[in-house]
Length: 217
Image 1 (tube, rainbow, N blue to C red):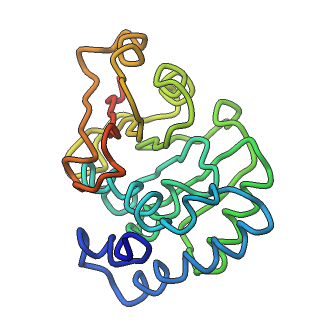
Image 2 (cartoon, rainbow, N blue to C red):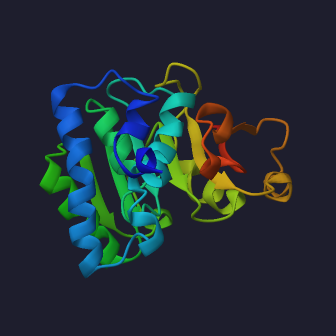
C-alpha cells in the first residue's frame, strides 16, 4: 500500500512536528537508501517500508514512555540507527548514545545523523558492556538480544529516578514473538511490563510486536 511507503504512515499517528523535524524525517528515506546501497543495514524488502517498519516501529517507545528534556538514553546494538535515530528526531532536547559492535553500521549511523543535522546523537563502535564511566536514564533497543542479556548489560549503567512522563528510569525495548520464556528468564516477572505495538499502531506489520519495560532496580 502506498501509505506504508512514505512519511504519511508516521503522520497518521503523530502530528506535532516542527518544520525541522519534518525536514529530518523526510530526508531519512533518501539518505538510508543511498547508504544502504553501500553498506547493507536494512533488508532489501524493508527499505521501501522504512517509515512503517523502522521509523514508526521505533516511535512506539515514544508513545509508551515520553522522555523529558535532558534525559540521557543509550541505544543498545543500534544497527542502522533504530530506534535511536527516529527517537532523536522526536526528542531534540534528549541526548542519545547509539552503540553497536559492528563498525560499518556505526559508520552509517554517523553519516545519517550528519546528513540530516542531528545534534543530539553520538554513535560509538563498542559493545555496551564495555562502556565505562557513563550512566543513563533509559536504555532502548530493538530485537538485539534476549531480554535477560539486555538487562544484564545495562542495569548497572542506569540511574534511579524518572526522566520520562510515564515510567521510571529503566530498560524499554522492542521485542517480537512469544516473550513468556524471555521474561521468566530475567527472574523479574513481577515487575516486567509489556504492551502490544499493534494496540498502539494498528497496522498489520505490528502483530506480535511488543514494547517491554523493566524499571531500574
